[in-house]
Image (cartoon, rainbow, N blue to C red; front, side, top):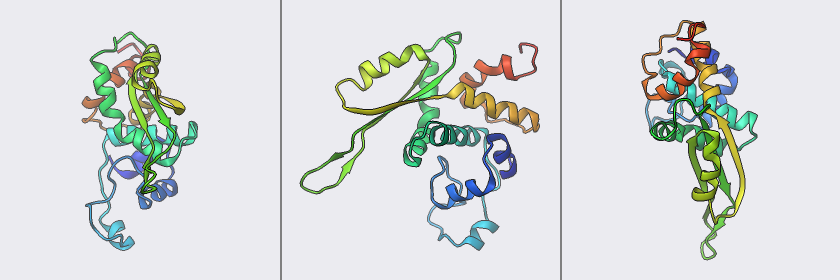
Length: 195
């Protein structure tokens, strides 16, 4: 899809998208090639012309995490950039009738190596239905000092993107990787007649 369609179906305005792009904050690669100098004239002339529905979904998740959940841009980029793989893994264990798919994110306190002063922030990411949240906290994050836990509704994000794509008549041939999320909302978003 073209950039204008990407912006419309995600609800992202052009100026905000450009800011994310130039600061390398997008959860997908928007520049034409890695390693090209950031020459604005070259970048505008050779800007990536096509985006996928997966890019749109990741941008919507990124915006939901940073704007609606108040997470840092760094955390939102990490979540959106890794969520599809976690959602695909969850497809194997979550029953289709288990309800909405969620992305669970937990962030620990910054850890610093005393001798170098360098450090890292522990992050945990998993996808599942709400019933899986206690398992995520009990098994994945157990014993860690957690600063906070955030939930992003992946089904809601996909429904919003899909509804806007259908409305704009955007062709979405690449929806297969997100099939498990789309199908959860298809009865609500699709044709309006249950399928």
